[in-house]
Amino acid sequence: MLLAGLLAATETIAADKTMIVLDASGSMWGQIDGRAKIDVARETLGTVLKSVPVGTELGLMVYGHREKGSCSDIELAVPPGAGTGDAINSFVAGINPKGKTPISHAVEQAADILKYTEDKATVVLVTDGLETCEADPCALASALESKGVDFTTHVVGFGLTEEEGRQVACLAENTGGKYFQASDATQLVAALTETVAEAPMSKPAQEVAVAEPEPEPVPAIEFNTELDSVLAEGGPSLGDNNDVFWQIFKADANGQPAGDTVETQYKGKYSGNYPPGKYVAVATLQSSIKREVPFEVKDGAVAKPFVNFDAGLLTIKPKRTPQDAEADGNAAVQIAFGDYSTTYYGTAKFYASAGDVTLNGSIGPAKVTETVTVKAGETIERDLVIGSGIVLNKAIYAEGGPEVDSGDTFFEVVAANKSIDGTRKVVAYSYGTGTKLDVPPGDHVLTAKLGSATGEIPFSVKAGEMTEVTVNLNAGVLAITAPGANFIEIISAAKDIQGNQKSLSYNYGTEWQDTLPPGDYVVRVKYEGDVAPKEAKATVKVGERSEVAVQ
Figure 1 (cartoon, rainbow, N blue to C red):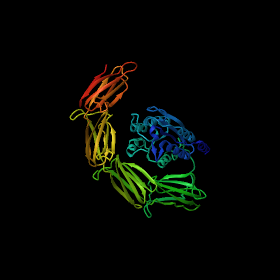
Figure 2 (cartoon, one colour; figure 1 turned 135 degrees about the vertical axis):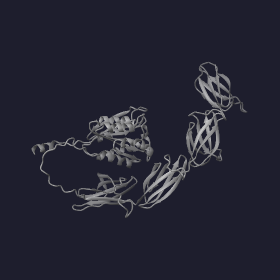
Figure 3 (spheres, helix red, strand yellow; figure 1 turned 90 degrees about the vertical axis):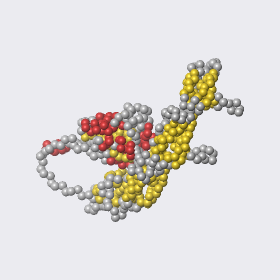
Figure 4 (cartoon, rainbow, N blue to C red; figure 1 turned 180 degrees about the vertical axis):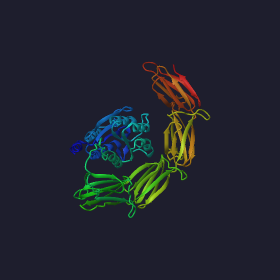
């Protein structure tokens, strides 16, 4: 018995070792609800780290914060240890995002530092982008899982689209972790709270079996608080639905939430055990609908906080035509009700308060707005048809002649009808041939410009239809070499009524090339010092290359 007591007294419970891997690439300057994502991340970490259990060994690894274009810009900012919250906050406060996104290398280094092949280890990756350093996160996750003792990666996709999220979720799925889609600050807090602040303590490294008398039976734990929620009055409990996020606070003298959270939980219904006193339960449904309910815990009684979200569940599928079988993953669907709004890409599945919900769908410049009236407890599935066609843009130098293959070609889709001042409204644009432009159905004009040559062609497109449109530039190429020159200029051979010649293009150096309409031109060359300028005549033919050397 004495030996057993000594072993029990000296036995320690080791804390989990967790490494936060934070994306500090240049894209973290992007906006979330009007704020830079890096600022949201700083604030969120500051909030969550206050709730980290004492003894949790937590570290921080950051990438993309020191160099542009480097796949090796990965830094162990704070080694894993207990009580590192202030050090992590201090380092994150000084981050200046600027680089690439080496997700795989960062996670692998974090696993090695945590000695994942020897001890239990957890990595929490927060990223707003995809791998940009030619590595396969999915293959890495499988390798880490096979070699690790008890290795887990959780992934928080901060501001990622649904499709982007699927490309990094494998890091979590292949290691038994969770993927969290965080589209705003509230969802980021929830994800980090679950993965960092609520990470359970590890079991003792060793269990020592000793012969002891049979313990007296321990009575079952009696919960003194039962929390429940529904979508509508009289409706079924939301039960195990983890779209419900509970935060329990002590109540101040005015009955308002005070201090840090006493407990957090993802579940529609659960039971808790709290010391006697007054509390406030804050229940949030999918980050969009929040309810507060005060309750009091008394000795010998069970408190039953209850929340009615007064909401419905909607699934909105954006499509180019009513006949499309699947939702269009490139479509943006902005939802708005009350003071809340957010944007989904592809299918939007969300809860909304009873009342009117505004849907703003867009595919490129094609837009549509609809209003859906939601009743509490109702499930709605609806298609949002955003009439849009696709233009595959091409250009040629001459009818039947060579195709233009240049990323410098500038294409614009403009309105078919001109305004009173002769201009046309721009509908869409892109650089490079063979790109695809989303345009509303109807009549339009496609223009193309390469160098000093332009062309245009009218076209029509239907919703859901892809139309190949080719612009004839009706032009040729003039290539000029002038050894020793420091300035080359191409001007028209013809003079206007004032005797002036139009300058078409120029370049500083000994070579210049331009795409031009057919006709006669003059090449003017200037030199440094006292060398006299020179001129040469040139003729451009449609679909041909002309070369002129000015000696």
